[in-house]
Every structure is written in structure tokens, then in C-alpha cells.
Image (cartoon, rainbow, N blue to C red):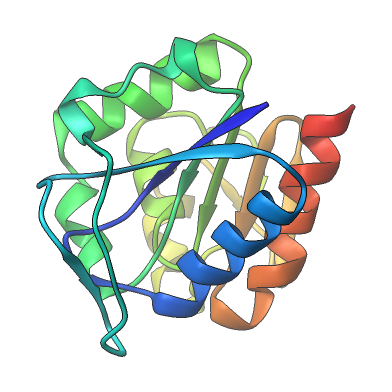
Length: 168
């Protein structure tokens, strides 16, 4: 099993990324990290990681799950065609598509939350409902192969749901 984690080049949410990475590795799920640049990416609290690939080179067919990590920098992907197409492609390929914090806005803008139950950082609930999502005020929500979470405090539960879905 393998996962693609997508982070912003600047200001990804440290705990959302590092907790997800830790849990995936603990469960022997290989991972690739993608971003808009292949240079050291810095989290909102100063932790750093260097992505493996450019987002534009990512292909949904190569992964069992695509995970969009949040943080204020994630807004760079809200209307990014490459990112939206990757989310659409993963969904069409019947992959597990997951997003945490503000990242569910990417899924909404890609059109894959229409009619789906989802959560997001509460301040952005209108951004997903305006695209047809059914906002649920919960830490995390699973609707079919789409998994969303509302922020850092849900990180561990979020990734455990992804792992559970991968093992099905």
C-alpha cells in the first residue's frame, strides 16, 4: 500500500503532516510527499521536510490514497488546476481521497464533495457547502472513500480512518 501526501511549500500544518506520516510508516504504508516545489517545505510551527516529487508529476494511479494536509499555506491549492485534477482523478480511480483542516476546500472545488458528508475547519464550512457538500460539525467524517477532518486535533483519528479504509 502506498500514500501520496500533499503539503504546501510554506505553512503546512506540522502536526497534521507529521502525525499522519508517523502513523502511515508505523503501519508499513509507503509514502511519497508532493508539493509545488522540491525544496525544504516549512510548517507553520517551523518543522521542515523536503518533498520527494513535484505536485505536477504526481499521478493518482500510482497511489492507494491521496492525502491533502492542511495549514494556512494550503490555500495555494484551492484553485490550482493540477491539484484539482489530481483530486478528481483519484476519486474517479476509486482511490481513498482524504483532506484535513482547510484542505477539504480543494475536494469541494474539484467537485467531488457534491452530495457527500464532509467536515472542514469550521470557518470555511460555507466554502464546501457552496459546492454541494453536506457539512458535518465533527472531528472527522467518512463518506465512502472520502475522508475529511476539521483540524490538527483530529490528526490521529483522521489517519487511523485512512489506514482502516486502506486495509479493507
